[in-house]
Amino acid sequence: MKFYLLIFILAFLTSFNSFELNAQEKTPRKYKVILDAGHGGKDWGTSGSFLKEKDLVLKVTLKVGEYLESMTDNVEVLYIRKKDEYSHPKVRANFANDKEADLYVSIHANAMPKGYPGVFGTETYVMGLKNAERNNEVAKRENSVILLEDNYEEIYQGFNPNEPEVPIMFEIQQEAFQENSIFLAQTIENQFTTRAGRKSRGVKQSSLWVLWNTAMPSVLIEIGFLTNAKEERELSTDKVQDYIASAIFRSIRDYFEYLDSIEDN
Image 1 (cartoon, rainbow, N blue to C red):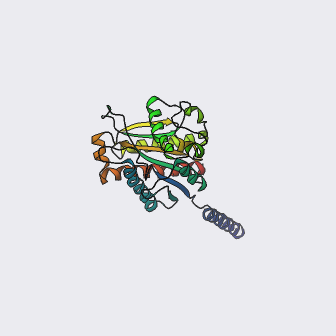
Image 2: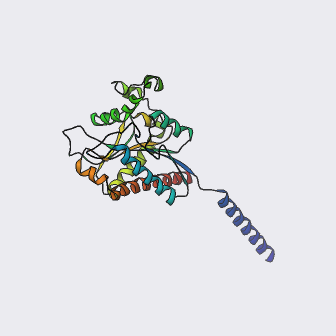
Image 3: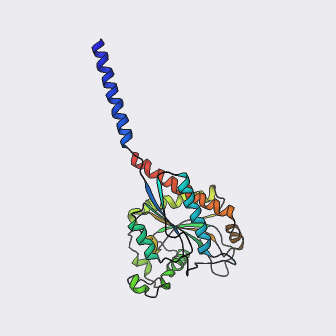
């Protein structure tokens, strides 16, 4: 009897030590996220009566980064810019690819043509060819920064954002990442509605150059319309900027937790 008891104890200790060793060997995965404050420097982006897009989105982007750096221990934050400086889209995409990032998040502010001052709310874009008329307007505006380059045709290999066949040029390079991009985009818009008190205009697909050229799940967030007087005033406040930044932070955190849960299964 003592012999069998000894065998049981040895087997238990061996099993326990093996479990403890496996637990020690399994280290939490580290993720890299690129935070891209849209526009900057000579590229103002859009503007309202007193806010410039490049200034607003930089403030929000830095707040998102602060949340991630202080409230997660498995996320490395890399910034396209941390001050008012210009960086053309190809540099942004190449930076993300060179760093082998796990996620690319580009933050922007929206605008409507004159005659539509009542439009407001958030939108989050993923790469896709389903360009409704409104989505195509956003794509043209965000892609038009390419034209600021003196030699843009050489840099972007003949790409002209004003050509009507541009949507066709965007082959589904992002298809491998689209499911995860959509998951994150939906999480962001849900956070905007339920936690930040913003009106969500939904997740949309469009032919955005910077999303097409990033080799990872990618989203472009429009945090509100500077052409709406009420929303512009709200976006100018620290309180609303913080609500928006915290919503984006929670979405990124939840996205990486989702990836961990998939790997565990």
